[in-house]
Image (cartoon, rainbow, N blue to C red; front, side, top):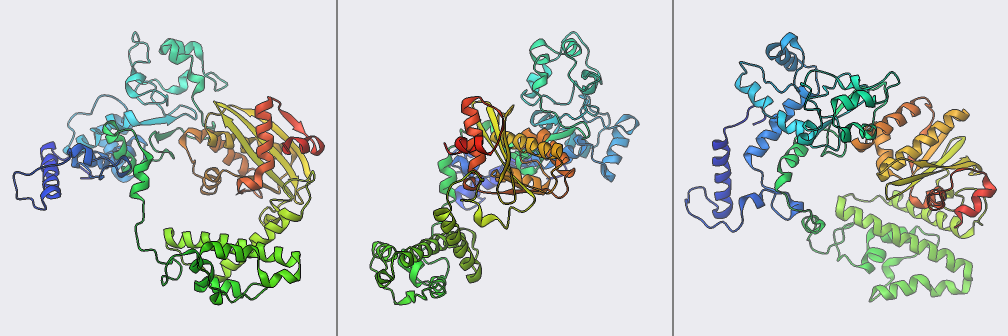
Length: 523
């Protein structure tokens, strides 16, 4: 199935056998009652159906994997043999509309998926020297039929490359474009996102967020025409984990509030290790309300004064918060908690609460919410980066501080970005370029976009629509080897977020010093 296209009649027979077995439990009955249409059952779980797969669709998706290697110009033994055997001078002519003569059954099967690849793929342009202007898709927002209709019908298609539409400065030559294409398309070419010139043209699969081809995304592209509008309720229903209410941590007792926070072996160890050495197994509460009252008003500690009571409350609240998080992780991800890791997380949360409740507000950045993360935010400079994005408008807020969070400078920039992740990427690129221009190399960039940070660490674009700016970020970071890009939660990046939001609403952009910044981020 992954090498040849099977005859449609054979695929239909195999579908019929599965369909018959599903409704009757046997393949021998000739007559049976089907309670639902087979097409509806062959749609994904998130659409409310059973995710059966038609053999014809799956066969095409599997064979398309081979065709994708040809389309990408992959250099392997079998592709070189294919080029030499079927195309003139051994040159890859995958995108040409004419099929070579005397194709074998296997080669014919592979090239039969070209229509699928033309419809669902697109080239990201770097220099345009490997993209056939007429026959390879390179305008992201046009469907294949629209793309073919975008060319001047008076000109005979040929092997012209996209690079011929650029001038010497690698900008679109609109006079040349207007000759080849209809005016509405020629005038909008400047909207195409471009990769840096030192990169290669890249073929991506439009339905995949990362742009990477896989059999799975190819199959979804094949069936998307018969899928109904997606309703998120179905995904939630299929992901429900229905089981007995047993504690996910100890797998012994009932999963209740009192057991989790008092009687679970992990909870008992944590309470005993606290500064008060509480033996929680001796605590008996009839309800979670009684436990809450005891936590907030610990009678034995009342005589020691408010300070002791407040410290106990902070520890108790932190313990409950971390235990609940640990319980959910054990239940959903089947990860058994460690006492030492859990206890250290509790102590860290207590320290953060103390920092928030005791540190006064001043013009230094992030001392209240980021004190506990000083071990993470290392470097001579820490740069906080965020972006505000709404209604096709975007603004970056960037705050540069020293390692002790003393503000060095802050600035905001208006961006050309439509997607939130694209806005975050452009904001980070501005921050990196600023550090390069100032000669700041020992830098930590703090970003609250996990998708972007994960992509940078893996050096893989998180979304093909931001591939151009993402490639520029990697190129710029390569020029600052000591630099780090880390993720911090929104609460730790609040100042940069407020600066971006204020600039977005006020249409005021530029540089700010610490005194000018303080009232803006206090809004």
